[in-house]
Every structure is written in C-alpha cells, then in structure tokens.
Amino acid sequence: MRFLSVVLISVLWASACDAADANVDDVDSKRSGILEDPYDFSKPPTLPNIDAPTQEQIEASISRGIEFLIQAQRESGAWGAATQTKGLNIYAPVPGAHDAFRSATTALCIAALLETASNNEAAMAAVDRAEVWLFEHLDDVKRATGDAIYNVWGHAYSIQALIRMRARFPDDAERIKKIDDLIRLQFDMLTRYESVDGGWGYYDFRYQARKPTSDSISFVNGCVLLAFAEAKCIGIEPPERIVKRAIAATKRQQKPDFSYLYGEYLKDQPMRGINRPGGSLGRTQCCNCALRAWGDEKITDNVIKNWIYRLYVRNGWLDIGRKRPIPHEAWMQVAGYFYYYGHYYAAINVKMLPPEEQPPYQALLADIILARQEKNGSWWDYPLYDYHQPYGTSFALMTLHRCLGAR
Image 1 (cartoon, rainbow, N blue to C red):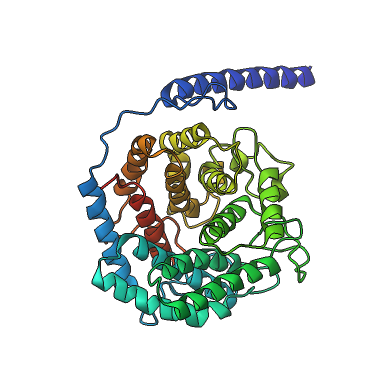
Image 2: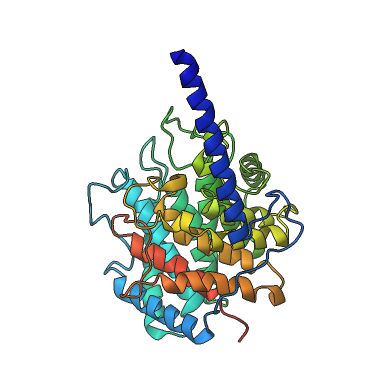
C-alpha cells in the first residue's frame, strides 16, 4: 500500500509539474515572442518597442569607456595583472596563465581603442605603448601547464589586434612584415595547441599530452575561427586543414535551434541547462558569426535576427550570472564572463545583416550596454584578477561602435 501511495504521489507531482511548466511556457512564449517552433527561422521576430538610444548617448558612453582604458593602462604598456588575488579567482598557474590573460586583455584593449578612438591623441599614445609591449611579449604566450591552455585566447585576440595595428600605418612595409610574421606565428601556435579532434579547448585534465587530448569548446572555436576569417580578408591565409577541422568540431556541437554545446565533452547531455538556449545565449552569437564568416549558409539573416532578439528579451539568463565570482553558479550554469563577450559577437552578427536592416538590432544591443556602464566608465562581468575591467570595457566599446548608425 505504501508503495502504491508513493507511486500515486509521484504521478500527481509529475502531472502538476508538467502543467506548471506548460503554463509557464505558454505565458513566457506570449510575453517574449520566442518562436512557437524553435526550429523555424523562416521569418524575423517582432521586435519590442523601445526608446532607441541616440547617437549622442552612444558616443558619450564610448568616450567614457575610452577614458577608462587610458587611465587603466599599466606602466608597462599592458592592461591587466595577476593582482586582486581573491580566493575565488579561477585556476591560473603562474606565469603562463597570466601571460595568456595579459596578452589577450591587452590585445582586446588595442583593438577597442583603434576601432573607437583613432582621433584621440591620448588613446593613440596608449596604443603606441601597448603595441611595443605586444611586440615584445607575444613570444611569451605559451601553454601554462599540461592542463591549462589559456594561451589559445591570447593567440586569437592578438591576431585581431595585429590586423587593426597593420591598418594603422599601411605604407610602412617593414612594420607590416613584422606584423604579418606575428600573425603567422599565432597560426603556428594555434596549430600546435589544436585539440586532437579539431578545434580548441583551454583545459586538458585527462592526459596532458603534447597534443591536447581535450574536446574542443564551441565558443573557443568560434573566437579563433572569426580571427582566422579576419586574417584571410587581408590576404593572410590560415592553415586550411586546421580551419576545416575547427568548423567540423563546431558544427558537431550545434543543435537544431542554433544553440551550441558548451563543449563536445557534453554531447551526451544536450538538455543540460548550460546546453539549452538560455545557457547558450552568449555562445550562440559567437559560433553563428564564425560559421557564417566561413560560408555556412544555414546561418541566415533570420537566424541572426532571432538570436539577437532572444539575447535581448531573455537577457536575464546571462545577466543573472554577471559579477558572480564563481563560474557557472547561476541558473542555466551561466558564467559571468559570457556577458560582454556574447554581446560583442552579437554586434558582429548585426553588421552581417543588410545595412538598412541593422538599426533595430543595434538599438537593442546599445540599450543593454549603456545601462550597464559603471560610474568609472568601465564595464565588467566577472572578477578575474585585474583583467576584468579592461577586457569587459573593450568588448563593450567594440559592441557600441557597431551600434552607431551611418554618419
């Protein structure tokens, strides 16, 4: 009898939960306008009616962010350091992990200032100092230990910084050769640290072999692939075999609704929170624009529009993880460091749309970013030693730069 009671209670509880979930889904669907069929991307979404930020507001916010980066630059010319060593900081074996973090952060700051402040004398002086540091220290960016491969971030973002540095003085042949050689060096390093099945991860806890044995991580693949695509656009071809393997590894992690697994190691848990649309909000933006940049016709304009729309109306899934000191402790197992990263790649997606169709999506992104600027002009999403404000501010600046309309 007791067994039957337990079974009956379980059935009733399951029915109640199903009914509650159905009601929540129904209400949420009506409120957010998410597609009834999550696999139907045949049309654009109906956008929310917001007061679009003005160009003046966006430009004022950018100016404050630029000023923060100028003031935050370290005497060495770099941004970020292994300071603020709170007990909650992530695993980062010295010195290699911090060589990687510092180079990636400095590269992002260089890229942000070159995109947004080319007419600002103080900002360009900061870039001059940062370029000297980057030229001197890129050779130091290597695998920290057998299990920590954070250097992949440094290689990827330094490619993007170097491309923007290259355009700064187009008639300086000696400088351009130096930069091109450094870009190819990053290709070589990313080839060396490619995961055994293609793509890249940033940990290898299993065997710590010379060739990383870890599965690739979808959003690392997206980040590197987009850097490779930018290099190809200026005539510096990345290694074709490595590109093809990274694309294949990313597509293996793509779900039918264009959410992406966190990493291929979670392929047997596709409905785990972090692999569901709410957990993939930041990753989807990066993976979509990277695959589209390499010619994936499945990433249509409507896929881009719907996922930017989701990023706006369901921003809470990302925002609730923002500034939490422990990675993945928030709902959907979201980590804070997805926040400005995700919006930056969403802005890149916006610029892939036809120019006349970009403004509504630019307004959505600008509305989010302007509201989260700190009093000191910075943006930050995850407390990472002393790197978080410079990298967060760089992502936000490059996002807002892509939200400015035609001038």
